[in-house]
Length: 115
Image (cartoon, rainbow, N blue to C red; front, side, top):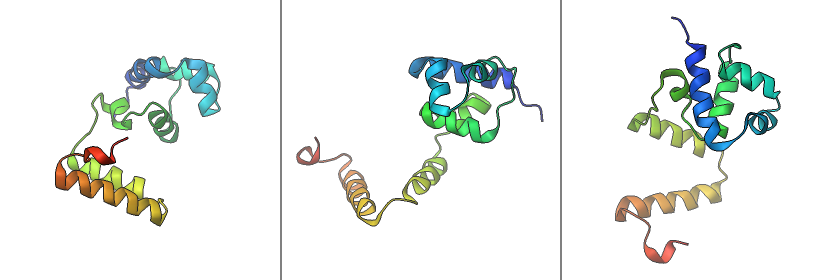
């Protein structure tokens, strides 16, 4: 399987421009702006860990960078939700549970609970 690092870099650049400059993204990742430029131009092979870190900062599904599409299947969403909840403290889990239950039962949060 060939990985198209140029396409990955182009997708990163497209989303990155909506959020950060190369310099700001590099600062947040503790890498050089030259590295970000090389990744975006397909000159440096990005590793999976860095791809996931960039996706997190850009609030983007890492799959989009790899395949050009965001995976939003129910299984993916359930898995992603479970991983987000894994490290939550019990009191926060209870709050999240209550909010989700309200949304599931009523289709949205009741007006009195919205801020």
